[in-house]
Amino acid sequence: MLSCKAQKDEQSLVGEKIEDMELVDHDDFTNIEAFDTRVIRDGKSLRKFYAEINKTRKPGLPVPIIDFSKETVILVCLGEQRGRKTPMLSKLKETDNEISIAVEIIKEKQQKESTIQSIYFPFYLYKMPLVDKTITFQKIDK
Image 1 (cartoon, one colour):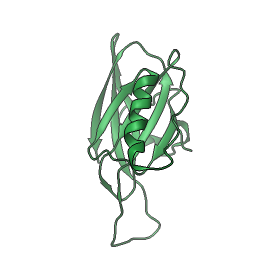
Image 2 (cartoon, helix red, strand yellow):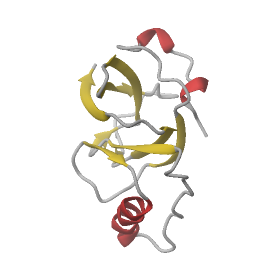
Image 3 (cartoon, one colour):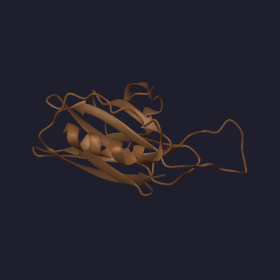
Image 4 (tube, one colour):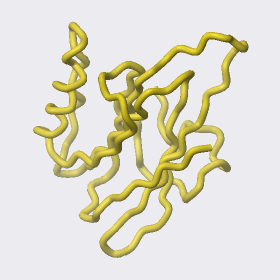
């Protein structure tokens, strides 16, 4: 698994690195067709998301175990993507009651050029220490 700490291309971040953010789950195929970001603050909402994406798979993906008394979950669904792409999250600004996070969509380097590009509908689930602030997102296309 990848985590934000393992990403090598840190100079491409728009904002500053988010400390203690960790990739918890990722899959390339969901039934979510449009770009979407969500902050999940309770187990019920997390189970509801997994119920939604597990409609199209048997067996379904297991729901990660998160301690919502200490952690907040950030969900990034990229929607329809041609070729593999990965989100990079960085903090744009932080005030007393809000954190603004940039979501950059980075195209992964291919081993060889192909004329046929697969279509993916990936999601990325991150956890970070609990914050009692509003979290907003700004999508950045490169």
